[in-house]
Length: 307
Figure 1: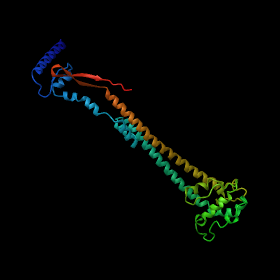
Figure 2: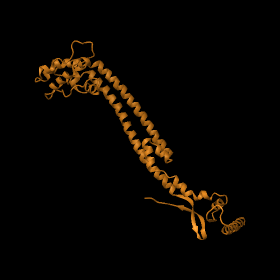
Figure 3: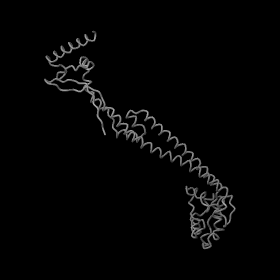
Figure 4: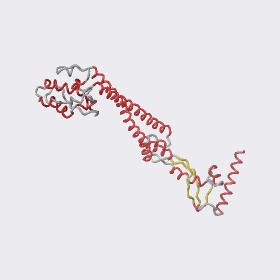
């Protein structure tokens, strides 16, 4: 009985207001507005909030996210595009990956630098380029009998014995002697030593048997310099290998950093697109023109499928 009374009361109110609004010009609206039968909407007309409902479509459009803008944000800083598209968990995940990869890169690159400093100090202490030049002068002719004597002589400064070995050697003459011996195949002389402190200087002396005679624990002649490798040679090679491994990990972290930027950019564009699709399904009040200049606001729902 109470429900029936409420329905009758609402009907009378509806008819009275409808008749009044049709007889009198609207004060605040350009056209006459009628009640819709939707209680929430109709009472909003009475308290002046209907204008907000008429702007609902425009409000939804204003909330759309730009996929290109989201991708640019994440390309600069992974996770920023996801944050812009209001996907906060994914934003945190990409940002955490970025921070973690930078930390890993910094740690292993720093370890590689420290290991490099260690093996370079080891080389300066236990490998002697003057000793290597002396060996060439003494045994180079036996390694390659066709080598010219004048090319294999006077490869280092014999007077300034207090200078570091790399400052006593005549590098141009030493390289010419190496090339002279290497003219004959099978001599194991395949490289010319760069000047210290170039990176190749430290690499070659622990990589090729050609430089085995320069290690201070070497006791070799022309017949076994490439097979009787010294303990220092192996220790130094292991130290360099460790440094290379550390740099390899840092390099992998750097590649993953680039990948994280690309993946985050792609995901941000996709996330923005999904955000916009959710906005397409919006319940709102749509204005529907009626005869006699009357505009009726009808509750509607739009569903748009995009392929």
